[in-house]
Amino acid sequence: MSYYRVFAKGIWEKNPILILGIGMCPTLAVSTSVSNALWMTLAATFVLIFSNIFVSLIKSVVPSHIRIPIFIAIIATFVIIVELTLKAFQPDIYKALGIFIPLIVVNCIILGRAEEFASKNTVLPSVLDGLGMGLGFGLTLTVLAFFREILGSNRLFGYTLIPGMEPATIMTLAPGAFFTLAIMLWGMNALKSRKRR
Image 1 (cartoon, rainbow, N blue to C red):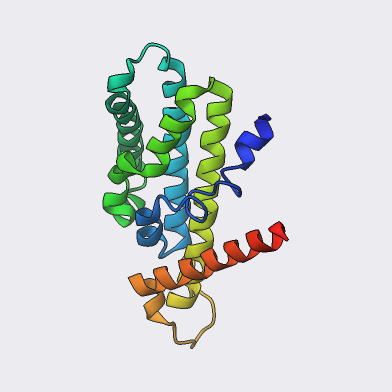
Image 2: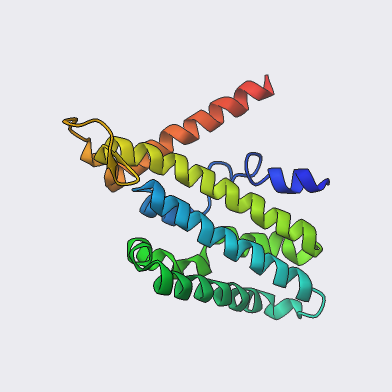
């Protein structure tokens, strides 16, 4: 498999949210604003890349029966780095993302890539896989947040878009997240079925 294919598959072919259906909890919870979505993308991508690097480096010395706890410890280390960095330098973002930063430890995307890809490949493909999966996750999260923020609060990055427009506040609540994600999943399935013809 080429390096480009390793990188690109996370964005489209194996998009974690729209194709694999994993990582839904933070996707639905933090997609109330584009700013939150971008910060969560940075956090998750950082953890994906660096946990993939370390898993790839130690794969040959880790006994198979304890590999999952070791992978989780590696992932938790990078999540703590992200959490403490955000708490120190971006306290408002840290508060906005809340519990979903520490929950990156148990995010299926990250543990799944460590187990499925990084533990079987060398460092460079593992980095590209982490980057591609992070961007695929982030792209979906950002598109979802874009529509929810505009429709639900008539704002984007804190700026009012159309003065006097009454926002559909349901879009900032859980039903709005499910509704928008359902439309995105329908769109992805429609594109895939058209490609097969």
